[in-house]
Image 1: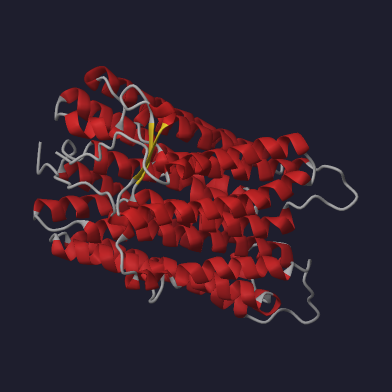
Image 2: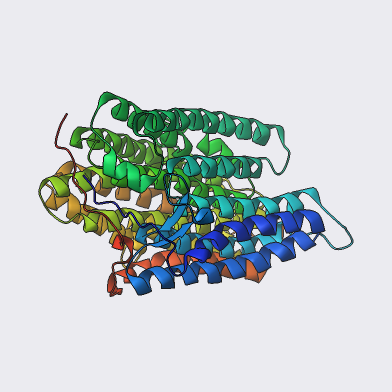
Length: 509
């Protein structure tokens, strides 16, 4: 049974957890009231202040070496609700704050209110939704009970779905409705599992559940329902059908938010449930099933990406593949624990994979948006001239692709190295093989895009539109973050493992 972090008092820095959630939503409401171009100004200020809050949370957790806790109203669970941030939360909070901040800078070019216009629908809506997505994600990362996590998921869904259809076209509205259908079905399954847990144990607090949970049919049923619901929201194969049309049809900045950030909410909940709530209930075979779905996603997603004729669809199916890597960590953690080996390597590998994917994929979607603006299309077979017109952008695309492939010193390289090491240490060589094949397939379509973009344009060709330099710089910054993330190996503190309980996995039913 996991050793729970049963803190019963607010700790120093706990108020920062409340600010991390309230600040984006206060910004959303303030932008809604002020309206017009003021929504953009409010959003940019909020993004800057929110980054400072995220750094403050990281300082509090790393400085104390313990999770930061805030008890809402001073009531101790199970009567009250607690917000908690451990090492896993800190890693995600900082990463999301950085990525969403850079996306905000990039979006000034696409969603700035035109001069002479008091208010435009798409920019006004985008900035409000961007802050709402951020607030919902922060609530996912700091929630201390499974029902508050459900509320956070719903907020994330209803902020993310409208981003798909900002342009109002029929095909994007259809994609948004499909996304909403999958998300609501996922929420229904998750909430059914929450009801079962409350009926069986009388509490929804994660720490208290971890202390009292038992391996019995009702618990297994809850675990299955909640996991399936979250897989639908995360778009893990075969529940991925909503993702490619939704992400590929949205504007570039919105696609970056959806692909890099929104899907991480559902995945983080799976991590939280399997590692903290159901750690002594889920079995090694069940972890293998979860990873088998991930392996299928890696292979199918990469193969389908190779067949795409549009760049944004290629990147969208690449997201389907990259999601699969995130689920390989579960059998590796289980295998290491079964062999009585520290599972920190697998946990760090999974978390680093999530962060490197967020930075790389956001950069690649934004790069695709700039390419579309410059060429007037995003046909993969006709990208010639893109590298000459947008050299900085194509370098960023190549760096993001290198991280997805796993080339050193990228974050993708370090993440895959840690996962490969865990696979070898736990004698699960087949997952290592899947990762190697996935890297080769990824390198194929990244190479195709870069080579075709480097071909010279036709004589007399001129760009359809000149894109602002700051947008290109924003894309390059995120790509460099992803590519240099491998230097995290030099960090003297294992941040992700702060406050982690001792995990004990069951070897079989």
